[in-house]
Amino acid sequence: SKGAALVPLVNALGFDAMTAHWEFAWGPRHWRALSAQLNHPMLAINCYDVETGELYFPASIVIERGGLRVGIIGIAATIIDKSMPPYFSEGVRFTSGCEELPAEISRLRNDEGAELIVVLSHLGLPQDIRVAHVVKDIDVIVSGHTHNRLEQPARIGNTLIIQSGCHGSFVGRLDLTVADGKIAGWRHRLIPVDQSIADDAEMSARIEGVMKPHREMLNEVVGQTAVGLHRDTNLYAPMDDLLLAAIATAGDTDIAFSNGWRYGAPIPPGLITMNDLWNIIPTNPPVSTVDLTGTEIQEMMEKNLERTFSADPFGQMGGYLKRFRGLTIYGKLENPPGQRIEHIFRRGAPVLAGETYRAAFVTAQGVPKQFGRNRRDLPVRAIQALVAYLKESKAGTKEGIGRFIAA
Image 1 (cartoon, rainbow, N blue to C red):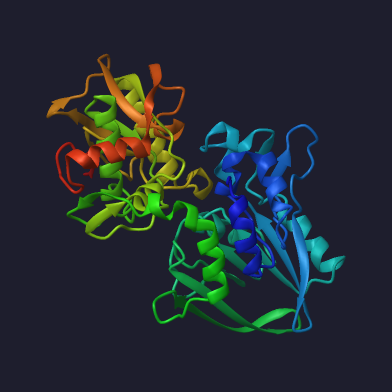
Image 2 (cartoon, rainbow, N blue to C red):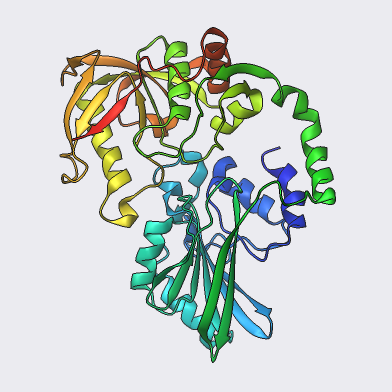
């Protein structure tokens, strides 16, 4: 439905505001039209129309709660036009939001009478900590993107930063005591979303109405796993081992790459369903192949290491280390950019700079377009490849797993 089926569900939740990242997956125009159907505003102080230079969405709103005027500013994920597929940002550009925030905070306080400033951010926790250091007069940052579970708020000066995990596992609650326009006290807790909370009957009925046409397909058992499949670790994750094994098999290669995504709820040991596969890679891109030199493999991985471990939070482009199969890489994360990798091996032999290696991959996040030649999309998509692979083997096997070994 390209997100349309979610609109009535989201509206029923009664949000006051939102910002975005993956909502741009069908393009900015589609997302702006879809967001107009929501009962709350989509806010982004850092998203601009390339042609007009104007903001593509409103920057902020003011709401009143308990007699207090609260200014809410949205910051969308700044990586949308930097590391996501190009169609995510067609016709728009993104900034970090840092330069725009001071003037907007001043306007909200002085012109709109806002006594409290809340920034709704999808930059990520390291980036939001940097924002709190450089932009004064923010009371609360509701942080997202990096899936961090903060038991207590991070406090930077007078700014509180909260983030509440991922995959709907927690609801974060922050209660503030405000006096004379300042936070005089606060109480925070993470509320686990578990079986102790009864389903809302009306919402359950709405969800079933959306999902019923797809239940039979999604419940189909397509394989099994001997280990839990997750993406909870930075250098390696068993969920991506399965994906890489499937696309390498489909591409008839022993080397494979995919992005270090953080999404995808864990799959426990046991049966794997189609629903699980759609959670692993919901965009279902085609499996592609490309020829890469050893030099290109090293350069591509060095760039990704910097985007993952940059000392500058805004140099971190989200996600974990690029996932790979068929290679063993030795390196030092603390080394300067471009100098982290020390050795790369394939099948126990060094990867040679001038040698060409064929690799399978999914999306330009797996292998960016500036690398390689003979790029080809195969007539098979990621989920088809996963289904075919699981028919022949069990997830959780160790053959061919890629490893980054930090020396």
